[in-house]
Length: 334
Image 1 (tube, rainbow, N blue to C red):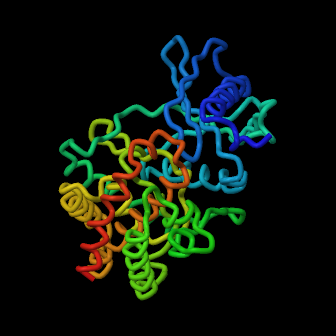
Image 2: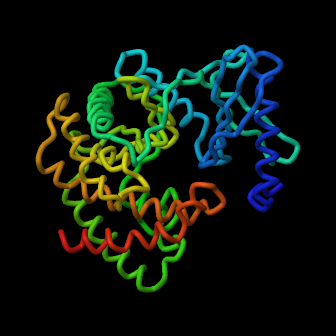
């Protein structure tokens, strides 16, 4: 069956039934409840028991990541936690001892990969809050993650996607679709966005992919993937982690809010925290605006290719239109 050809409500029903069936693969109480908390690349559910215990269950999108890639993600986030770098989710093995389960449904062409993790406490920060201190803490955490990525001896089978210019904004194989297919990208916007993408490509080619600039990164440190728990910043959802520019991790925390007046101050807070842990050359800091624009156009593409999601529906055309001013400012600056 072509799952993508079903209505959105039909898809949600099948995913929920799959999540409910998946709970039987784990040593969980029989009376757990299943509640969707996010639908993006994957479907994520809160699993709750009557005694107050909770878990997060993720049904992976078909064909997005291989089993080896998912196992690689779990290997990195587990090592980050075990070595004290940052608090990350704790995967829960199924009854068969495997962290990755395969769960089928009569209306799915093939079983989906499923991962269960212990529930992490904390709250997602909001762009309207006082985020200066949390962003400094995030800068420190990100620097520690970058140090770890440079020193960690990855398993021989480790496999994660590469996020460079071609796989982000290129015409041939962009991971999240083409920015040209974004919502409301008319001829005038296409010309402006095209000039911006061309400039980004030239600057990144000059910036290079040296060991000190390009490596294993989270790739999606937006506010929705951070939990503030007292003085602790927790990092969740490593689903897009892969190989990219380290300074891309400076741009992703302001994802969807790049146009807000607060964005520049938040990046400065981030760099302040980063420098407490790791040297940040001025040339690298000066290129952060390029990564902000890279991310912005990448999200224009994502919204266009994920129009069925609540996040895409909430952003839609205004997000594309808000990108115009950012492109003009970027072209003016560089």
